[in-house]
Length: 266
Ligand SMILES: [Zn+2]
Image (cartoon, rainbow, N blue to C red):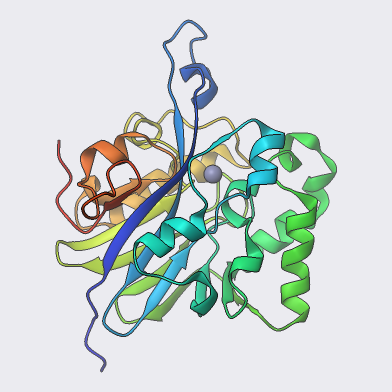
């Protein structure tokens, strides 16, 4: 049996958006104060494996959708010593625009995706704007092209990609969203991506309003906690608190990247 590997894990914050708290919770009170969303890509590396998790949106889409880009995910990775052009494995948690832009930056990569996410993004639900508005048809089409190039590895449910790193289909937010469980020096942590956008969605069981299946989303909150060694080790997909709870990944990386394989501050 192969020994479990231990990973260094990073969140790179590449964009931000100021908005109302009521935009972030089903049934939210429109009088609540502001609640920003941050946009991240993640990196997990051991002595023998390296995975990039999601690829972020590009500057063009950011401008069209009114998001404030802070730096390109490519540059963020470079500042952690990773050349995007050399990356072999990219995990796509789901196909929403803020998770799958910048394809061209990863010419050598295989993209890991759940069967159900491709089914969802190309199927009947996309005839409704309610479900399609967070997808970019050109990006979904680009992923279909990667399928025909043999560069997409499909997964159905759970999959171990390397000792100490596995994928877990969660669903809810989209039909095929998956989260990533990673073994680190503090134990098993979970990169939830948008299975929970904010800590509060999961902790208070107040779902985020962009949702395919509310029941699956709420069940997912329970599953995320179960997968992590400690509920505090579940890392939400868009919470600005991530940048406060974890220390900068190194000198000069304050506000850019944090190290997630460390005890979060309370
Ligand atoms: Zn997202």
